[in-house]
Amino acid sequence: MLLAIDVGNTETKFGILEEDGSVLQMWRVRTLVHRTPDELGVFITQLFAAARLDVRSIDRIVIASVVPKIDFALVGACKRFFNLSPTMLVPESQSLIQIDSERAAEVGADLIAAAIGGVARYGAPLIIASYGTATVFTAISRAGAFLGAAIAPGINVSIDALVGRTAKLPQVALDPPQRAIGRNTVEALQAGIMLGVVGATRLIVERFSEELGGRTRVIATGGLAAVVARSCPAIDIVDPHLSLLGLYLFANAIRTA
Image (cartoon, rainbow, N blue to C red):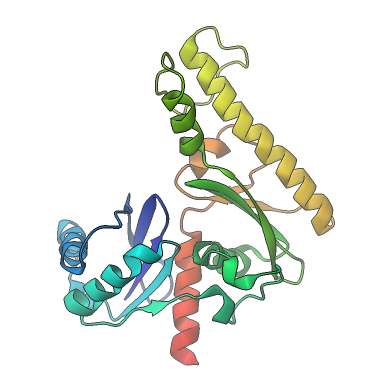
């Protein structure tokens, strides 16, 4: 089986995939950059133990990381606790999807993993909306190439900035608002935050679709994708495993090369 690791700025996804690409188990945990290889290894093996899975069942590990500070410890943990050297997804050197943006080296490995998975599962053209630390909209051309992206502050980043700078505003649950005009502080925050995200999604999807040549399917992924999709008709499908699928396909391509 394959252990796919998608390291984001705020969260890291660990996914165990069967030989056919199906996701057997997935964990979403906080990204902590100051862990040692031993700390990371113990933590990962504890996840396996809690799910009653044997670390010896893993014969391949693949990593997409946008947090260079954690890479050394993560690779060390894989070598010591799994006796495996992981394969790193490097956007500019992979061959599964063409990158037509101006600087391929600046594209996040997580975006490329999701793009590979998205094209394989849904075809092209495609818009991938990823709701994580940042809200990132990725455009895939009709030829299946990565064209570029639009990047905005993530939902939680925006909330933290707002609450942190406003003494009387409370933290709120990200629930779809019942109305646009909030009648109390919580309703007002929910309306502003959620309708703002939905409005931004609609506009960016509209502009992307125009530049891609017509109405384009929109796939949402990331930790807050399902929350946004409940209020956003512009989103066609929520797929939380898109980057894991991309990593699985990348690992298979490396194995057969």
